Amino acid sequence: MPATGRIGRVFRVDGIHDLGGMQGFGAVGHSPAEPAFHQPWEGRARALMEAVAGAVQASGGEFRHSIERMDPGHYLTSSYYEHWLTGAATLAVEHGLVTQAELEARAGGRFPVSRPAQAPAVADASPEVSEPRFAAGDRVRVRERHPPGHTRCPGYVRGKEGVVVRLDGTHSVPDIEAHSTARRYEATYSVRFDGASLWRDGQRGVWVHVDLWDSYLEPA
Amino acid sequence: MSGGGRAERRGRGKQSGGAHHPAPMSPVEQRVAALEALLTERGLVPEGFLEEVIRRYEAEIGPMNGAKVVARAWTDPAYKQRLLADGTAAIAELGFGGEEGDHMVVVANTPAVHNVIVCTLCSCYPWPTLGLPPAWYKDPPYRARMVREPRTLLAEMGCELPEDVEIRVWDSSAEVRYLVLPQRPAGTEGVSEAELAGLVTRDSMIGVARL
View 1 (cartoon, chains in turn green, cyan):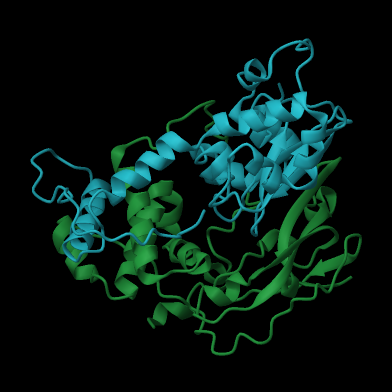
View 2 (cartoon, rainbow over the protein chains, first blue to last red):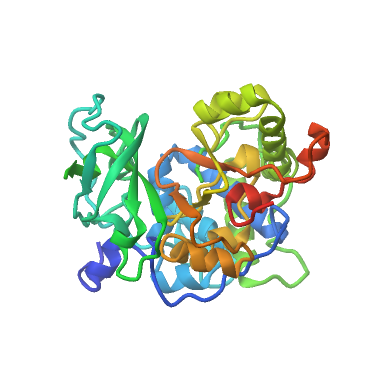
């Protein structure tokens, strides 16, 4: 693990991909219709990720985290399918399918891969939480956690209170499957937040719903 | 999005990835070609695998599927009821489902409520009914702003809503994928289901437009 793990820790652990509410972006470059792929290499990059993820049996969490660990500057300045390419190359290198040196030799130049995972591998996934702790209508608070690895708990709802509006069955906890072959299954919920409670400049008449795993929540 | 790969393995890909291609390639194209060539040499990319993945995304899925679901809901009240109660099952009735569409929730617009979908963490999107997400859906401005200032952003995108219309934003942060059921446009009484499907836009099913 490189020494760079210590610098910029707060920034790194929360991840450049966690964009909800981040300010300073301009207009959305909207277009009413688009082809699936704008250039041939995009489709090939996407398909290569499928080949790699299949070869190494990557979970959804491990796949997403391979992109989330990109250098933040590279992430924000590269296109979506460059993210997929970088993630695919990262998984291929980490699982020993290729080396970064081979990639760079073949590409005739730099081939950046994502930074190493900061979270330790999960040795004990702990028991499944098959019984939901909450029911529709319950008030809940999102735990104020900043895990060093993958999570699907967006930063903008941590510490915030909301109301459970829907139960969605039990699903593998991303925080565990991204760092291990171990699995834990928990209930997931759709939780409704008042937009005005999320942001000091929140807009009126806005409800933001976020889908969250059981262990992300505590009773409010 | 998901990384689930297909396990078919039938020998080597026919394209070398262009490592010796004479045409000039951009750096990112060179990187794609490098990864493709190395994986192909190691037998990890079966012949035709990449082309088949690309064909599937280009030809089989897209908003034309979601439009059929919407048109059916507009013309068949019992179907609409099933769609809102169990989106996955009702969408499967029309033959659509699979990866990124196996936990579907359909949210209905009304005169008083407007729904819009986003994925702040990556690019989750209902592939079987809407196809792959457009570039702007995956880019930072949309993901950052839709949960914070949806009224402003929708207006910027041409969807100006009266102040008294409640906005419901759905951040697809777990396994559910959302589809917005837009309101049926006025004056379409007597229009056939197939013609109605032609009126349904991708944007109206994401929730960044009203019809």
